[in-house]
Amino acid sequence: MCDEGEQEALLAAAQQLNARMREIRASGRIVGGERIAVMTSLNLIHELMQLRGDRSQAEQTLATRIKGLNTAIDLAMDRLDGPEKQDKPLAPRS
Image: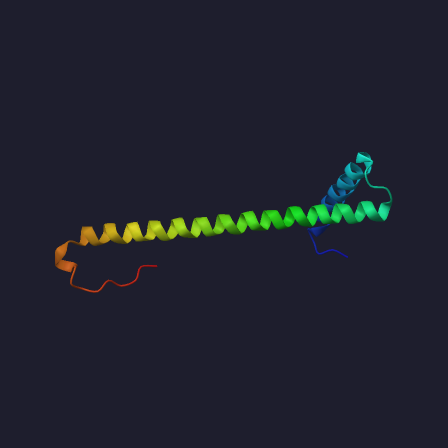
């Protein structure tokens, strides 16, 4: 039994799996339902792992860019505050 709203997603996943299995069967390189299912599973897991790696790398790049932007904003704010406030410690900005 599926939670409410999950049935459509599950059906879409089943259709995608079926389409992928048909592609492998049509290639003619692999014979047998179990072997086709295993190969399809391996292909899907490989794609998932690549996507997760790509996402992780994108998140790291974004975090680095955000940190750089925060530093640039802090420097700009320090310049706007002028020398009279340079002696006071700055409160961390969030």
